[in-house]
Length: 86
Image (cartoon, rainbow, N blue to C red; front, side, top):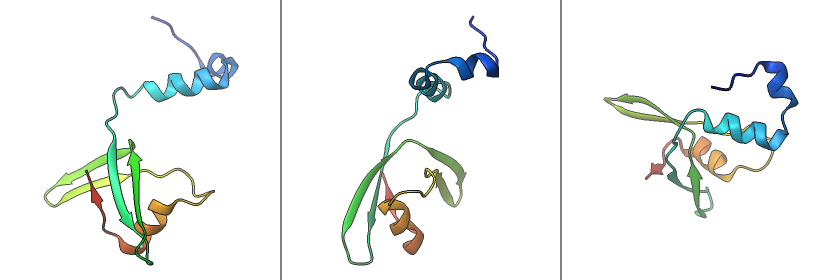
């Protein structure tokens, strides 16, 4: 088994380190989230970062990347608070 400390991880190629860290949590299924803007424009996005919060009532959380660029799904969801996931 390979073990590495923070200093060793910091020395790895950035692309390799990103892929290594991203694969640690194991298999992540993709989900589709459909939203609609206030103007009625549909948007369909893929998400792999979701969290099961509860079953009664059904609650699922979605992680968004930092809001540094336009994120249509986040904008649409923030306004409506309710969308569909498949």
